[in-house]
Length: 159
Image (cartoon, rainbow, N blue to C red; front, side, top):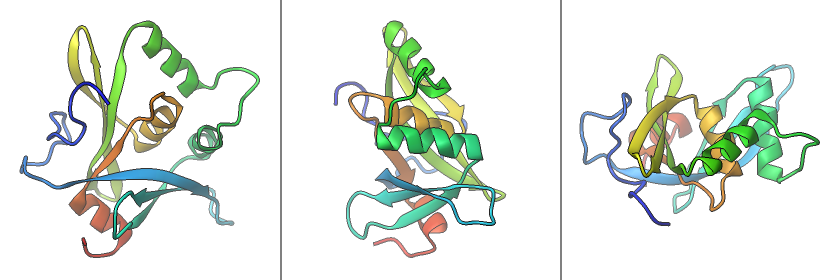
C-alpha cells in the first residue's frame, strides 16, 4: 500500500489521548443475523493471533450492503457505498484506512482516513459505512481497531 501509514495515530475527533496506542488490523469475516433480533451483526476478526472476534450491531440496510460487498455479489444498480466509492475514484481520493477508535455509551466510534492531492483528511463515520466502503475498494482498505476497543468488543484480554 502506498500513502500514509494506516497504523499511525489517528488525528480525528475519536483519537485516543495516548498516541502510542496499539492498533490491530481486522477484517470483516461475515454478517450474522440472529432472529428475533432485527439488527445484523458484523463480525470482525483480528488478522494475527490471538484472532479475537468482535460483533458490532448495525442497521438492516447497512448489514445488507456489507453482506453484498463481502460476497462481491453484483447488484443491478450501484448501491450507495459503491456510488460513493466510484465518486472517490473519479476525484482521485484514496481511502487509506477505517479506524475504530472508541466505544462511547455502547456505540462504536469510527473514522475514515482519506488522501488526495489536497492532502490527508480524517472524517468521522459510522462503522457500518466504513466497512461497506472498505470492502468495495481496490486494493482493499485496512480496518484498524484500537487494541482496547477490540478487547472491549470481544470480551477477551489482549494477546
